[in-house]
Image (tube, rainbow over the protein chains, first blue to last red):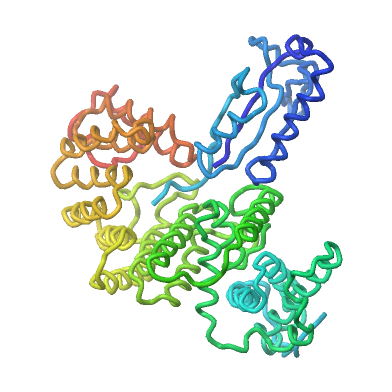
Length: 120
Length: 442
């Protein structure tokens, strides 16, 4: 079963972390990624660019129409996402709880829809 | 690199693929028996299969295809061992004490009966030390002869992810020093049940409702049947192996009728039974009929017997529900499980009315695993609809849909909820709404 984990944040929050703490923070996340890539359970870990770089795309008269945005209601936006493929939801939740900052901030956890037929 | 004579008999890619998949466990088993070192043998065997897949369609089949594979695999193994030796400068690897000529001399197919070796290999791949996904991946590769890319495609994960999983599994085998000998006595029965469970998982994964290119995205249900059929040939007297094969055949027989071309689900009650595969039903029924009188009746045999009763009914109304209920009673004793209880509740409702079924469901709500499961809501919705409680049934279907993670299943449940809501608003209750499995038709 595949699962999506989302981490939220904003510039203000990240700016509040002292510069000297960043290397350790990044090392922790790297270690987490390596650990679960090695078990074959972490399919990918992706950090997103600043929300200033985000765009909204529509198709107008068959052509792409790109505008700035999204201008969100929430103060925090997606900072990174992680794709898991695990034996069970229980196992995936265990991995989510092992995320480096899960003791401080919750990890958003979404089961992914699949095409498998229901069991017998 | 060519070994052995070539007959020049041309075969297509699919034919070669089938042949290779059949030889894969035999060649690997022979290598493991001869040299030990499963992790190295497995790599070497895969390389030999790959070489054959490239060469045979172009050059024709060698005269002795299995001998060809065994020889090429042995050479690859020697290459690997040598490079590993020089790299790590270790002397404890297999070929050290053995002259290379001896290793290359006898073809691995010198012994005609290698059933036990292949069987030992399967038991090793499904060792309890390994996680279920590892067992499944390793079985598909070592016994099924599928490439890592094919297994990854079948499970919808990147090849790198599957490669990691397989390599971890092989490391576990190496680190734990798992041997590939056949377990005996009580351990054998326990280990066989792990093997059957892994095969059952492969079947149940049942991806690819739209059958793609078999060579790139193999249909796992068919692969599971092929492997279980092979296991049944090796262990013809085992009732549970026969039971599992029968269960797969009897379930897979309904495959064409189970989904519409758009991928949506067709429940049993609405399936066009003319599209059921009668050849598979006949084979499955014969298997289970032969196995049942054989003594101790296990869970796979009971589930196969239930599937056989469903398959022999020409309509939903013709179904022998009392017999199905009796079989579920036995299954609940043999292998207690909340999902069995759920299915038994449906059978009970068909025999004694929806109220009896709903009473059983009430006991399941106390089970933490089940209380929030979409299947509990879906079954309760169905039984409440049968009881004429349309409003509650619609609400349950909606709850079930919100909790389902399978795309076709969620779509089906949402359609049921919408149908009941529409029926309720239209003031249709009682008889019309209570028709079991009444389809939504606009």
